[in-house]
Amino acid sequence: MKNITFITSFFDSPYHADRAPYNEQLFKVLSKVYDVNIVRPVAWTDLMRTRRRRGIDIKETWYRDRISYPIYLYPPKVFIQAYGILYFLSLIPTLLSRRKVPDLIYTTWAYPDAYGAMILAKYYRRPYIVRVHGSDINILARRSDLQNKILKVLQGSAKIISPSNDLKNKMVELGVPCDRIEVVYSGVDLDRFCPMDRQAAEAKLNLASKKRIIYVGNLKAAKGVFDFVGAVRILMDKGVHLEAMIIGKGEAEAALRSEIDHAGLSANVHIVGAVAHSMLPVWINAADCLCLPSYSEGVPNVLLEAMACRTNIVATNVGGIPEIVQYPEMCLVDPGNIKMLADKIEYAIRANQFVTIPSIVLEKYESLGEKITGIVENICRVQE
Image (cartoon, rainbow, N blue to C red; front, side):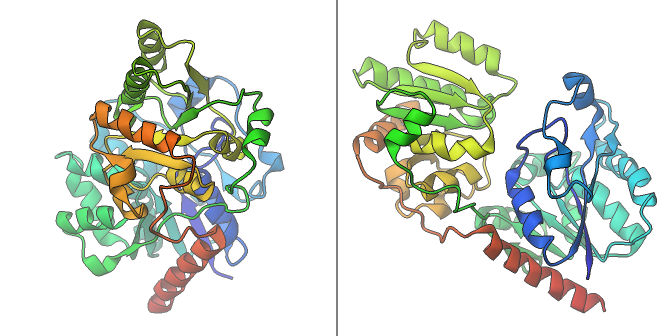
């Protein structure tokens, strides 16, 4: 059985609950085919910030004997050019303690995760696969001090997994060979994310029956959460009665609460905070519309999950989002266009039916795992 070592910060840890659940789902599927080991570096700043474990109970997970948590030391917000090397150095104690050399390394996020994994792969003389996300290519790869490092990672990989054609095209523009990149849309847990009775969903959350929109994501300006509040204000001024729920946490929470209070929306806009991923289908089914007005994206899993629940979406015309909806003009707006955002939300909640139909097949993680397995086998066959 081939050994695959997954190296990524996009995974659960004792300090991070529900961190990138799509990776956990994929790794679980692949663990049925391969000997899987997971290396999940934890930034020292996260340890200082949390001060105590408040995430998952590792003993209860399927990967409890397969994962390690090295400490990633780095100087916050400075010398980012050194983060890749420092990430690699954080891997050394864990990898040296393991006698088995991996047949292949799978890493996600182009920098610093994939950069550190690249150095390790060169040391082992093994191939590596990079799964990009969105902002690592849309934002980090545009930085003059990081572009060459990220390009080196991508060009040295055996294969790059891209969640959208948009990201693939951007990597090709950077100088990555087109045939090195495989577009594989994210999987969806279709057993969990599926339509459920609206009243049952509301009852489970102790919510009254009313028109409702939700935002799910990081609370920061780049995700458009302030535009979301602005659109709600426009709708309230028009006399559209609704409830807006903001699910997530982030750096802008205090400013967001102030904005909501200043706009006089406290009775209608509620910050729920982070919710367990297992409860997210209930929240989505209790809503008429899920809104994500980001300024930069790959393909957000939450949009796929909402469409799997047959809940309408409104989002921005950025990244790979236009690729996943059948009629973009019905639900997508340019980032920052708050008036149009309000119009699209109003249409979505008044439709009383599912109108934002996906243009791609929403696949289970088992299907995604089969695709990744095929890619891994082709790479290993070439190496033999």
